[in-house]
Length: 178
View 1: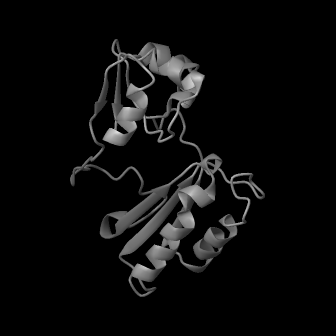
View 2: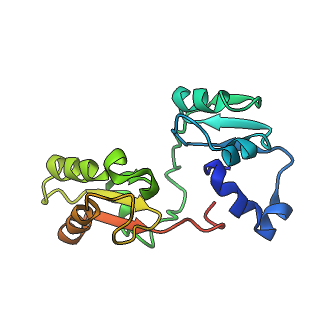
C-alpha cells in the first residue's frame, strides 16, 4: 500500500482488493504527524511490515507499533521507454521539467504552505520559460474549507488562472490508480 493508514479501510472494502491481495502486507506510509490516531495504529498492526520515505517518519511509526518499520526512501526513476500514463492531463510533459506539490487541506494550508511553493515557482521561472510546469495536487478544496481560515487558497487559484504552467489537480485517486 502507498496510502496513509486511515485510507486503507476504503481500499480494503473494494471487492477487487481481496482477490488481488498478496500474501504479505507491506504498508508504505507517509504521515508526518507526531502521534498516530488509534485507527491508524490498528491498521499498522495488520501489516507484516511498514516502509517509510524518511527516518523521521520511520521513528513516528516505530513508536506506535511492534511491526518492523524500515526507511526505504521513495526515489523512483520512470523508464524512458515506458508510455507516459499522464499524457491525458498534461500533453508534452516529457519535454518539461515538472514540479509537484501535494497536500491534504485537512492538514491546514498555512502549515503545508503551498502558496510558498507557487510563489517560489513563479519567482524562479519567468513566464517565457515554458519548459517547466508546477502541478498542485490536492484531494478537493471547497470554498471556505476549515483548513484555509486565512483564504490562501484564492491566491493559488489566481496563480493557476494567470499562468498555464501551473496545473491544478483536485481529486482523490481512484482504486485503479493505486
